Image 1: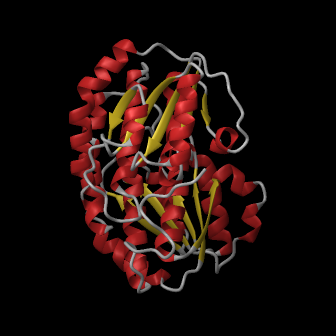
Image 2: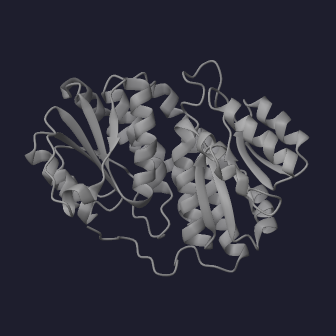
Length: 353
């Protein structure tokens, strides 16, 4: 898992370089759909959650996350004419994801596959392909394919005419390299959480998907019961369960989502809850707020990722922000004496209907 986490700068650079020509062609050929439907499972579904936010923000096209059982169990037939259906799967062999894609083609949709395997069933079924160039992923806990899928959604947004600057994407591998330099600090902080068996992960907007992905990594590699919430949903009731013995992890970029997250941070400070904040050098308000909370710890990516040059300010934060979380899960598993590459009851490819 750690080896593959460290491969991510090269994976991102390789994926971007190899897909630019096909994305340019897709940009020329793809008609603007009335609706986009995303279908995935597991970590890929978390990437789809990001895709929903990104595509709606930068293209203005409504996006829906598919419920595969509507197709596979209830056998409902949906009218997908003029829709774009995007299937996301690391292996390309997720049974229900592929069945939804088949149905979509029959019902008039344009289909795109995002996968790490060019020879997979998904790659054969999709009319268009965005290939994640991650190489073989041996760890059961997906890391490099997740960030590769996030990058693929930026490329898809660009193909659909969204305001995604390719030069900004070219800077992402360097941002991930900087995040990786935090491993010694993160390993030291993970030791503090050795006996943690429950936690809450909080984020919002473009980083909401990272709350799901971080929680999933804590669950599958560290056997921690991890709940995930947007900062808005947490305030609608679940915040009542937090106390000094309930660790909270927050993704806190600058920009429009920060005021709500700052409110959560103030509450955590008041109740002296254990909090760990992931941010970057551009969000000075988060660093100041954390310094006022004696129980808060900060993981700060050295690079300034947000600010006036990004619209919105947190547009390019999700990929570098998940890297400290991946490192934390891998280090915590080691501290707990667990093998993150062989989680109990899990295998690399899962088949469901």
